[in-house]
Length: 267
Image (cartoon, rainbow, N blue to C red):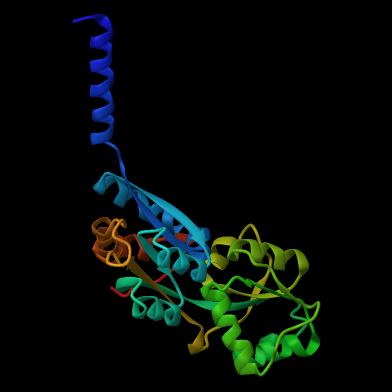
């Protein structure tokens, strides 16, 4: 056999071996609040190691995360807007939704609290005070779960926020916190991202918290393989079972930043 044929055979075998041992990839669309918290950096690696795969994380707002699922551009979604999640499943785009974790939303503002939000009894009253004094407010403005909750509160307050005081960033939670800090403005955040940022990236403080309506649950959903046969449904279900099972729930429950828990589990 000529040297050329030997080399060709070796290259072919190497190529086939590379194909056989190629790492499987799972595409996960999730919220910026989940990514900004730092949780995925500790939650994902054990899954990758145990399943010999890579998880490609696409961090966007909940609305966009679900749109990626609708288009079949991801295999699984991890989001926090129950109404949108239920519609995603009802419309046939997602299957096997499971609860993963929860925290809550908080209203943040400057220490001086120029709108007097701390004296409010409800979130709608807090928002009314901000709008009444036209104190700067930075909104996600990106159809994320946080933005959905914010819009619900404005509606309950009977306020249509307009004018130069109301700024729609169209950015993730981390970017919005930094923007609101720079402008000494109010904003609404999930507690997890705020806890991750408060020691080094923002001097905003919680001016309103604790109302039942600020509960913030996260759910995970597999993209329906009957809609998109190419999705990696089996691997998606392994991921779902992992983060809702004992190992994943333990990692989530024990995840803290500077001693502060960012999420709470159901188990």
